[in-house]
Image (cartoon, rainbow, N blue to C red; front, side, top):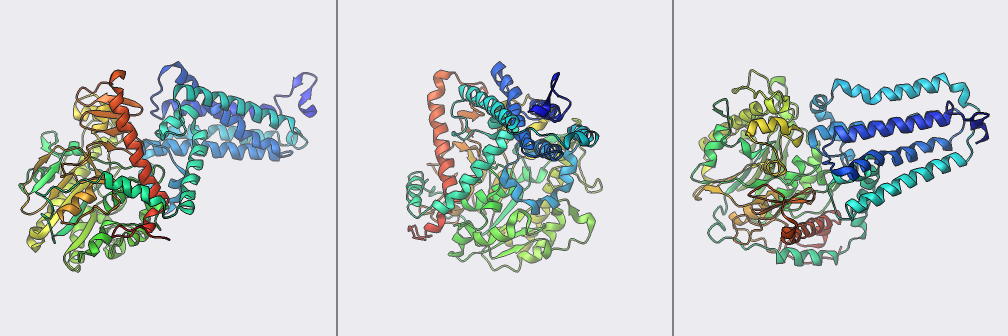
Length: 635
């Protein structure tokens, strides 16, 4: 350190001074970002203190890498590390604006999707975001202005050792205080927002990398003995089919309509005196349609792909990333494979690229016979195109001839795209005015919802005219929320009440409508989730599921569990909601008194057990050890 110390002490105008300046800038920038851009529910002085100090240890540690290099390379490495930390921070800001979540390592495995997301990303970027990168320009200026000064600078080993020691001291204090406020923070599967709140954005990235590596190693270490415990669990939680409904749709065709970003509050909702979804409203009252008004999406980072994954397999999506991407080569016992033994042909219809969400790979693993992607449609007219593929009306129209090529009975899924964030629509195609909250996403949401509703009505008209309607079970489901909780101010104006934690949980309800010719319809208030679709549909078709590894249960069964887990460990039920570490009374919306925690904690433990077992199946690829007739296999 001799060359850093002069007659007046430490030369803070040299590299050490710039290092400390860089630490200070990334520290304060990260703290302000975590405080203002993420909804972390920071409460009390201790949590505010942790939010303040948690970027400091990371900044000291990561930027100290520059000390390992000599001369002017020190400054170059400092700028590179600083820039990477800024990119990580800013990327999470943009990601959070729509998903209300943080980037995980597996989401970076999805570059093939990015080309189709340019419109959404543009809508999330704001002019003031340039402020995130101004400090990098300052460091570059200092690198150029002081390049001669850095040529001869040598710091030896003391300075990096001191920097790392200080970083570890700050980080250790951070972790100890975090554990005091939230015991077992790193082992109990809390929401990602907890990790960011207590440990900071950069430590979260390390945590996520470790968890991803652990999940990746599970398959290599798994063997056939691991499936036995899973079999016992699913059999003990099996819900016997309701004899009134079992086989009611036997030998009928199956059509799934994937309702992109459709939320249940839209059903019967009126905007400026007009019904937003008049056709879906009429279906909800149809004599042969059952409408489930307490049906929740259970997706995580995989969003649409998570919804598909659950309805095909009755397995949960992954806590990080998308199983469609990272587990695309796994062995599955999905609906198309099961129904093949009952004479069903299977197909997916989607007017977007076949590589999006890795569908062209994983659909083969599910057992689909056909995948009609963008190559099967005329996408030459720009007026017919949305940002994610073919608009719904031309999509359904062009799908008709493709559907008619399939032998009956068939099992099919139609994936719509028009009602997708940022909910932009050519104003020549709209038939309802925008809302007027001042929030662009919320205001646009109703126009694309109306368009999707009209497209579905046109498809139903075709089904009736073709004769398919009378011999087809039609299942319509919302895949995930359209309006995230970043828009709660506008949503409170739309629904006419404050968006409390319980109200926000109820906004995660998505439509489920099951239409079966001859079935007695009506509104069903049973609590259910996307995990429950597969056993429900199979039982309606008269297919027994007792030997299947399913983590959902038949919604129409008297044994159906009404505790609905979310991927982050939260849950809802008819009496208790568990949301972000707190328990609420469903009816009053108020937090439970601690004296009432015993039942809530039992339910929470049950939810964690179910999620953990499902993750073992997916991460370990355990279905390769299990035959469709219920026998354990050796690899």
